[in-house]
Image (cartoon, rainbow, N blue to C red; front, top):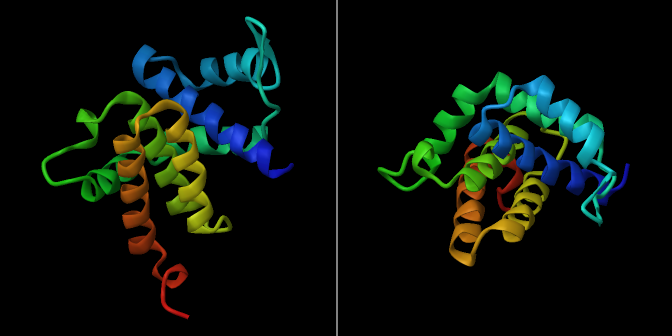
Length: 152
């Protein structure tokens, strides 16, 4: 699977996490809905990208399995006194997916994870929020993967 398939998987995962958060749908229902109707399909004339299904599933399952740790880490990286539960739902989904990858997908370079989720954020959020996503993920990456940022 190519770069665009992984990017499409990340975008779909953020959309799925958002729906799970807002509508309260469960994992199996979301997986079935996205894999049947969204990923690689066409809705109202809009063609959705083929996505790396394994990465899509991995992100969703991983965020749900480790959500307490992910949310705690995210809270620590956000500005003082601004807990994740107060962050807008799309940004919350983006940060959770990005945090999951930074914490658990060590094979993906931190800078790639940050860039991918900043790109997803840019599709949904304004410049200030995109900057916040960048800053929060960068802070976590430097904390959890300092070897990737140390001077050469």
